[in-house]
Length: 217
Image (cartoon, rainbow, N blue to C red):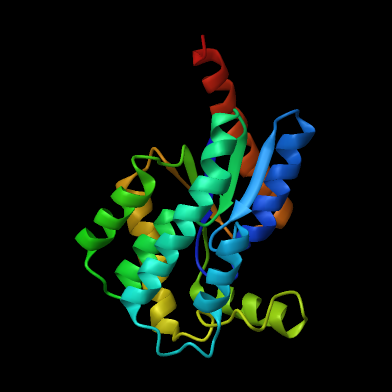
């Protein structure tokens, strides 16, 4: 099963991905917890380029294809082998983030992005996507506080330094995607306590895993 998390900066995706993985492992599931960009050795080098705040002149098309390259490697090296082995894969960000960040916020043609997804994903879609939603000003404040406290890498702040209007587009884009695919997306209030968020996500995943187990011959 492929579980993905999406949302704006400071929504708590990394924390919740890790906590969800731990809870599923306690219940006997084999879990791979990963992220985009940077879920592979090659991906970490791509991540450094994408998130470096000095790369302010990166063309939006360059950004799109760097994310696509990272995802190709991630799928080949991590995601597809784990799914083939019957493991649960939890990814902090996936293709929906490209649709929103490079499409809605950057303004790249939606059809172009769909074509890139078709080439890279080859039909693969998450079984469930948790959208951790919160007002962008709250998320940015969280993110910057974490950076100031040393909990996040100050060399990976290119998106945190975008305007509030940019981040508002991000939120609106994710909410629009969730409305288009209500069967896949699960909206989570990212302002709730960390433990409550994890419990909500865990309950939903266990329902899906149990359903899948019953459907397996």
